[in-house]
Every structure is written in structure tokens, then in C-alpha cells.
Length: 492
Image (cartoon, rainbow, N blue to C red):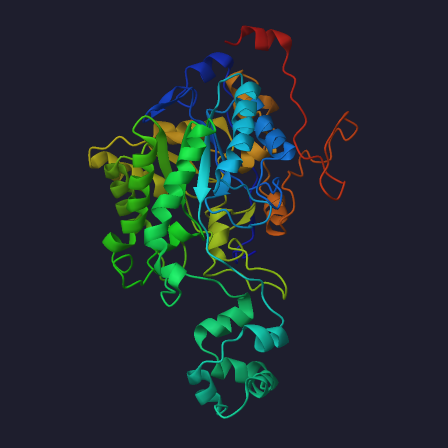
């Protein structure tokens, strides 16, 4: 992963711990309305991909156990991981691209409702992504994958050679020759693995995305409603299809790229199709980037404008993130795929405890505040969720008090301690296990291993019936928290 030149060590702080009465009187534990959806309080577990599904994208026991564990901490809302809207192989990621997934997803929503005592609302993040291939062995690339265009053969002086001869001679040129002769996209495919982009209008299925995606998102949203989810979060962030349409790097010439107005056209059409399909009484929002954090990418100014358009369109909530792009990802090893959290933009999304002077805590709060303020000045009241390095009550409460956001999202902190909201609400905040921001979890995600937290994944390994990771070394969910009986009895 990219690391800043400065190596300043930061430590999470527990800060002030509220009493039970102070927690009950706080903004953090006050209710909030997301369109038709009411949350008991403003704690939010954002979508995280834990690699608990199977190759068919189904809800497994491990998936249910994972989300039920978060639900026992009774956050205001949990957003289920990025879930694919197409019925195509995508590894152990959840899918919602066919009606056959509804029953499994319904088991998941029921498990969360039961585990939280009905106190936690459950949304699902739905996503589309374009194809990316692993970085090839150069010999395999030249033998099988490189398209021998007339222009390439002309540049190389090989237009009279057979296909096999041309490939053999191109491979024999070595890295210096390849760099001179291959065009930018072929060079990128050789160095990083081929990656489809929204600008690839020479590919018919990329041309058709504006016609295809609204229906795919709409049908997925209907399935989500049938499965019992309280709402959907449209994934318009990071390295995926919808974020690529919003990006300033989108240069499509078909009316869906270039200017801001054209770049936002498909995201608005997708939202309109979803709203049409699920109705006004179902929560629909989106996650988008406050800043792409890449050269030539969309900025906070773009994001502010996007946020106002999403609010005007009628979205029930907006959740911000930042960075996490393929554009500046680190070169993968041969046989591995590029990972969009290894460059500077990835660091902006998931900064760690060794940081620059800005530090890893609340890195997205000022940008989110700017977007929210513009929305409010436009006379709109759309709730805004802010995430990014938020790990204690005082920080969350101060953000709400300052009007920087309306809901506080805590991903890594919730992973470190799924009970942090419940503990704080009960006046037991001194028992919260604080995330140390080592990005141990991110390292597992990068390797597509089941995500856990180093603060608990080797605790209480003798627990009866404990389910372990594939390597048999780590527990898959955090140990149970058992609050004092008198505290629970006094809670509502």
C-alpha cells in the first residue's frame, strides 16, 4: 500500500466517555429519519466485504454469523457488503442478480432483526463492476491475449509475418521494445492486467451500459425489498462502474461522459429507475466519493455539485467516502489482480496509524461538511453519512454538533468492536475495544482472505462450536460481550 513520506505515529483515543444519562441525551443516540426509514440513533456500520460468501454468491452460515454479530451491538443501521447486481461469477461476493438469491437474503435480514431485537435497520449496497484480469505472464500475454492490430504490426514492421511469427518476434523484443511499440492500453494490460473502462466504446457491452444498468439496479432493488431489507444503497463510489461514470476521467462521447451534467446522467437515470421500481415508501440512497484523490479525477467541487443533484432528485440519504481507485493502484505481481486501495487514493480511503500530519482520524469530515453545507444552503434536508477513522463518542458527537454530518459511519471501529455503540449507549464506553488502524483487516481483504480483526481473532479459541477461518488459525466473529445484568435490565 502507498505510504506517505511522513511517518507520524497516531494512536486512537478513548476521549470522554459518556455516562448512561449523557449518552441518552446525546445527538449520536437521537433518532433520525432517512426519508421513509427511521433509525433509532445515528450509528451506522458501512458496507465492508468480509469474503464470507461462496463462489455462487450465496448467503452462507458465515455470512449470517458475521452480520448477526454486528447486529448484537445494536447500531442504528448496518449496510450489507457490496452485492453484485449481475448473475455472473465474481468469487465469494454476495449476489442479488437473480430471484434465486432472495431466500438466502431473507434469512439474513431475519437473522439481523432477531440478533438486534428489532433495533437495527438493515440496508444492502448494490454494485456493478467491470471486468479486470490478473497481471499476465509476458509470454502468455504475447501468445494469447495481445490483439495484433494492423497499426501494431505496421509499427513493428511485422505486417508480412504469420500470426505465430509476429507474436514470437514481439515477445523477443523485451521490455524496452514492448514499451515503444505497444499502445497505452496494451502496455497497461501487460503491466497491470487488462481492465475494462467506461471509455471503451469499441466494446458493444460497454456501449450498452446506459441502456442496461438502470434495469439491473431496479430489479436488484425489488429483490432487496422482497428479501426484507429496509433500503438500498446504490454504490457510486471507488473503482466501480457507477463511480467511473461520475469521474472526470469519463470521456465518453455518447452523452454520458465529458461534462458534469453528462457524467451524472446515468447515475440519476439509475436512481430514477430504482425509485420507480420500489416506490416512494422505500429508502434509497447512494455512496459516492467526496474526492477521487487521483490526478485528473473528480474533486470536492465536483462532489458537492453531485451531492446537490442527488438530493434534488430525492435520494433519502447520501454517504460519502474518498479515493480507492484503480488509476493509481500499485502494480500487482504476475498472476495477481490490481487492488484499488494500494495507491495514494487507496490510502485516502483507508489511512493507517502511520500517517502524514493530517492523520488517519476523520480524514473525510471536512469534505463531507462542505457537501452537506451546500445541500442545506440549497434548501434541502437530505441526511448525510460521514465515515473515515471515527472511533469514539466524543469525535462522533462533535461532528454532529458542528453540522458536519447527520449520521456517523464507523467501519474499522465496528469491526474492532461490534458492540461499541451498545457499550457507549449503556454508559459502558470505557469497555470499548478501540481500532488501532494497523489495517490488518485491509491486508486480509487485499489477499481475498476472510476478514477479521487482530484485536480479537485469536481470543477465546476454545469456545464451543467456534467457526474458524479457512486456514484454521482465526475465529471469524468477535467474542460475545456480556454486559452486567443490572445494566441490561435498566435499558429499554
